[in-house]
Amino acid sequence: MPKARSAPDAWLIGSIALILAIGLIMVYSASAVRAFQDFGDKFYYVKRQSLFALLGIGAMVFTANTDYHVWKKYAKPLLLICFALLVLVLVPGIGAVRGGARSWLGISSFGIQPSEFMKLGMILFLAKMLSDNQQRVTQFARGLLPPLGLMAAAFGLIMLQPDLGTGSVMMGASLLVLFVAGARMKHLGGLAAVGAVGLVGLILAAPYRLARITSFMDPWSDPLGAGYQIIQSLYAIAPGGLVGLGLGMSRQKYSYLPEPQTDFIFSILAEELGFIGGALLILLFLILIWRGMRAAIYAPDTFGSLLGAGITGIVAVQVLINIGVVIGLMPVTGITLPLVSYGGSSLTLLLTALGILLSLSRYSR
Image 1 (cartoon, one colour):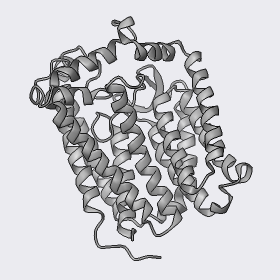
Image 2 (tube, one colour):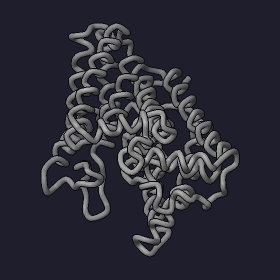
Image 3 (tube, helix red, strand yellow):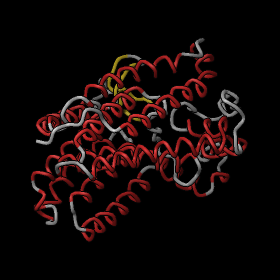
């Protein structure tokens, strides 16, 4: 087993720390008005976010100082726990409904999203499965079908909540792992075609999803309904200009843009910090993705390469979808911006996963 370096990738640590700091600042700026209206405390959301950030940093430090090979041993039981949680959350009286989806387990306002655990659990197990059977990945029936069956089962359970956004991120990152493992392009191309047909079916099966598609194409056709969020997001971004209106000076957070501290926090950032602020945040994400993929490429073994690519893929897919939605290039999906948007379980789990990536970077050649 290769010897670990004394410290993980400094570029990776720096980008994570800066993005997290920007996130805490923007959660406060975006949520202060609503927090004061709803709870009489303008620090309500940022205090909770800070608590989960501290828990996540603690978990990240632990995983960064734990040999990443350990997770190969626990990949299977962790995946089984993730599946059990996904089933449990669907049980009436146990799973809590928030935002129209039964996707939470917890008490009162504190809860976890099992689908967030599944994103990491699936990547861990796929990295183990495909590294143990790498020679089979080019065979559809023996190599590709078993992981696809697991991915489909997890996606199906997530869609029963329903949560198309989180399911899409899990599938996107998992397909990246399959690609890196050496799956044939003709197989992946066929799967993409089947997936596109299935996605159309899911959209047609739920009227609200169809409304999101039509509103994405022409949000002004229903400005007070399905197109409202996209329009208000664009109204936030446009006045920001080059340097923004100034930190804390957003107008759209005054009950115009729904949930400004979560899915559309990038809109508030662009309004307050302008093109320069938005570009800086995107640059930090690109550095994180670059260093994550670099750690995966130079990993000493196949398991490390697949694990690093999968964790980096979670961040990359989520950033792409979130910013694409905010600027009107994609339909609204309910995806948060990694390390920036308000959200306890998603923040803690992502920091835990990034700790594994930091551990991997200590062993990269």
